[in-house]
Length: 387
Figure 1 (cartoon, rainbow, N blue to C red):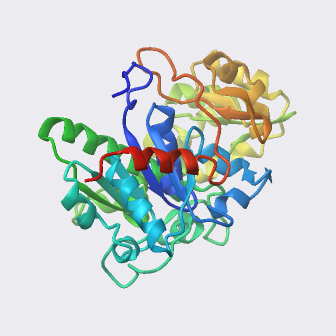
Figure 2 (cartoon, rainbow, N blue to C red; figure 1 turned 180 degrees about the horizontal axis):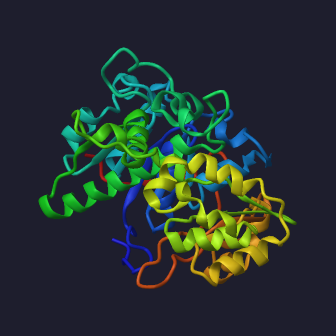
């Protein structure tokens, strides 16, 4: 087995990924970033459709690259007996198999959890679905914006019409992180008990569990004696306008609000009884946030943030993604890195957010071209002893 280092804790672990789009791909990219050998199985032709979404060149989109760095790609036609046979060999060579196909698809191919784990009990098998394996929606396809509606995200955005999308693939990514955590836990358990296990994981359950701690707090305590406070979303005050943009702030204490009233030139609000104390402000938070947000700005974003920082109020400028690579804080902690991709040329991506032993993992390899490693991988499995 490959030697494990602090920044490559999954070195020596092999992961076989059958998937399209983000959920499984992002989860396994994190494993690859941490040293695992991740083999992505793609259909011949166009491969994973994510390759062609958004900004792309040479058959690799920016989205695909970000979710598939450091992996190897093999093309297998799972509509043929030969393709299924090769896929089965791959799975039996692995520590982890992960897929995001609809319920029953892998079983029909002979690549289901029961069939594989009967032959290899130490295998960890993770099946990601949209809605789970039971219930009236179990066989339905699921995409991020559909799941945002189903899981309750769209009602929490404060849109005047009551519904709005979170404009990022939040449900896909939440599910990916949930899958990565569950598989890591299963790998840890295998070290203790010597056998793998089957993991079922749905987007619906992952997203509701993610949303619930704060979004569902008013539904957590039951009974007529519950004293309900203002919805937590009300504490997301409207941004403060500046002369060159806007800033976000998190005023939680009396001292924080005193600083906010001063910075916007409204010290008179300090004497308003309905804005004094957390309980009163909670009741009138929407009104107060609107008043503050509509004050005419007379300071730059930098001046406002500095003034609030001097009084220990959490605040930050509202930045565009384009601003982040040159942001001093992002640069100092090393969030971004650039590398040369054999097909894409110069690319920019984010580093691992986790530091192991105080260090980030070394820059990982490029995203693969479709089927780039097919011959090498087929040679590897042909050379392995057959079970």
